[in-house]
Image 1 (cartoon, helix red, strand yellow):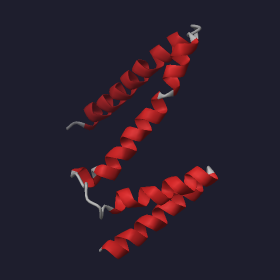
Image 2 (image 1 turned 180 degrees about the vertical axis):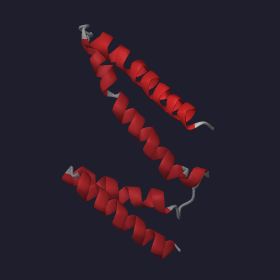
Image 3 (image 1 turned 135 degrees about the vertical axis):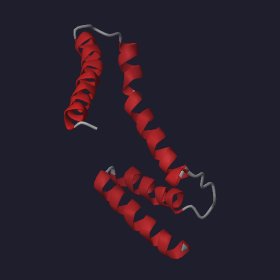
Image 4 (image 1 turned 120 degrees about the horizontal axis):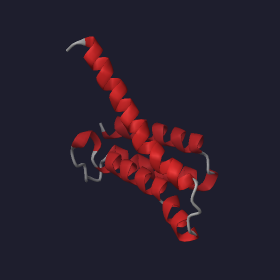
Length: 108
């Protein structure tokens, strides 16, 4: 592929992505949205993150892993417990990494 064409495609996709995201934000920023809409929109990030995390816990590598020896799923328990009590993302991340590595070692 011609390098100029490749760069043109990359720049075109970047610009179209920016326009698609910027236009609704710019339009909605000038409007006073009802409280119900604000409340509804506040759930979007949590929902998206939950979908991403659930997929990685239950289907790591693209294959379903619904077994009791799933280290991804098992490591999520101490991660959630640490976050619940400390409200620390760093602490929860460290607990998740350590528990995942320990489970991988123990479960083979």
